[in-house]
Amino acid sequence: MNKKYPKISIWIAARNEQENILSCLTAIDALDYPKSQMQVLIGNDQSEDNTAQLVSDYVANKPYFELINIHKTINGQRGKANVLANLYEKSTGKYFLITDADVVVNPDWAKGMIRHFEENPTIGHQVGVTAIRGTTIGHHFQSIDWLHALTLLKIAATIKLPLTGLGNNSAISRQAYESTGGYAQVPFSITEDFAMFHEVVKRGFGFNNDINRQVFAQTLPMPTLKEFLHQRKRWMVGALQCPWWIVLLLFLQALLLPILGVIALFFSWKIALLIWFLKWLNQTITVLPTILILRQYHLIKHLFLYELYANFWQITMILFYYSPVAVNWKGRIYQ
Image (tube, rainbow, N blue to C red; front, top):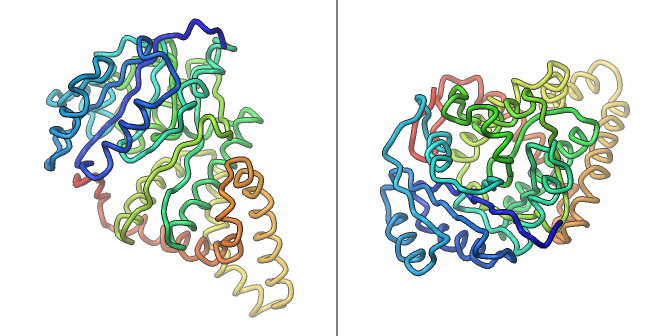
């Protein structure tokens, strides 16, 4: 990348994030990137806690940071999509880097996220890699879950199969964003990252996924089962818009245990056990290189038990998705 660094705008949507926002902003402030070429926009989405005051105090002597209290609704957008639509109107950067208020990025994040844009102007969308920072075995399972999914997205991107973006660790060139009309034109979706990614691809822009230490970030685990299920139900909205064969594979994976039960009962328990082992082996071979690249060595010992965790939550996710319960995200209800 040329040493003449392009101007970047970093977008952070924050709603009721008083416990996390300062860690996020401190990491952004520590980026190895010229401050004169950075614009950090924090959209306070009508927080009901002390988020706005904490941000205001933190940015007081940092001219490249700006707190924007979100009052205007654009194009019927809601939640994060509306925040990003508002932040765009204030943006001066050539590239828009997007993260969340509970995410901590590493010092090389900005450079890594724009590298492919600068090398290839046809690239319109960039995705980094995010894991969970936590201490319990449940947190570690969630981290493996994220890394496995993002590894599969990387494989798909390598073969030019567009699946989705990543709302807490992505970047869009101004040219690509404006070609879509931005969130001021894109119809509302609870999975705003999925919607914008596909609009960018429709306009003929390329996309890239990276798995390396530069674009690595860490987010917080879902603290309760309820929040976990609502997060996954929201993700399912995007997943079910993927190609039919991808959806079929997702359902086959989620329903693996019942399928193996039928095979064991009516055919052979040895065949069922072999299929389960091969599935675990394939899954482990897929995610292990990512774990090693990102130096998340503490996750390796959990790879076997992760299979049991994955079987449980995948079945539960499908049942919860088709339940009549509306998605509750950041204190808002989405039908």
